[in-house]
Amino acid sequence: MKSIFPGPPSLIQTWIAPYLATLNMYELSKHFHIVLGASLFYQLLFIFSPFISKRFFTSYLTLNYSTRIKWDVHFVSMVQSILISYLVLRCYQDDKLKEDRLFGYSAYRGDIYSLACGYFLWDTITSFRYISLFGIAFYLHGMAALSVFLFSYKPFLMYYGTAFLAFEFSTPFLNIHWFLDKLQMSGGLCQLINGIILLIVFFFVRIIWGLYAAFNVFSDIYYNLNVVPLYLALIYLTANILLNILNFYWYYKMLNALKKRLESPKNCIKMHKMSMTNT
Image 1 (cartoon, one colour):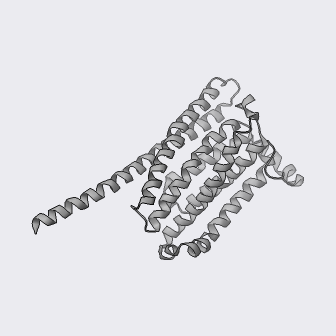
Image 2 (cartoon, helix red, strand yellow; image 1 turned 180 degrees about the vertical axis):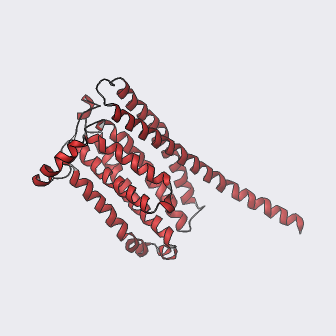
Image 3 (spheres, rainbow, N blue to C red; image 1 turned 90 degrees about the vertical axis):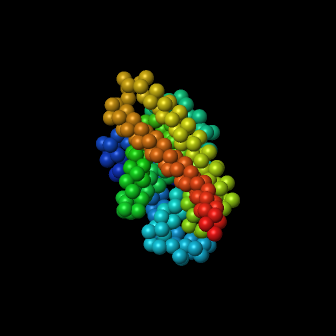
């Protein structure tokens, strides 16, 4: 499949290529402009989110400063996850990398991963800037994801990139769940249906599929240790373990939140019965 975007100006590519070569990211010079452009695009979405959001959702105006920041981040995440999910589905028409799962290169996937790198770069910077709001976990997630996808431009394991971008299939439902909370629609039928879909999709794409993809990656690395640089094997091992731990942690938190919501009506009924017996 052909590239999605036009290539960089030759002068910029000639200038940046030697620096990226020292980092062993030889193919990144063909996509570097997309990474920067994508980061700028997501930052613009973040900046314009308040103007768009308050126009369509009056509840946005009632939110405090920290919640507005989180809303704007979720807004960017929503746009990115839908865009990437669509492009990932199209990637399965690209069979070029099946011939070389370790070191193959595809210009089409390179463009898609550039959009992802642009987002993870923006996400890492934003998570660090607002680390008091989001915590260290989101920052580590952004760093791990960015490092994994940047090294695909060696090229290395570009074939498996779409397997991990498939994690984004669950993100729209996660964002919808969060938005419904802030729109004072918690506990309604809409949130219940979305919550069930979220738990199912998250479990299959991030837990089951995530472990399966990680197993395939490490199998390919293990059986080719004679040609795979040790530092790359360690980077991917560390990043994948971190991402899988975070996925389990977040799934546990979602299940725990669901449990509390299911228990709260029972507590209300119990308190109501106690008040009735006391009267």
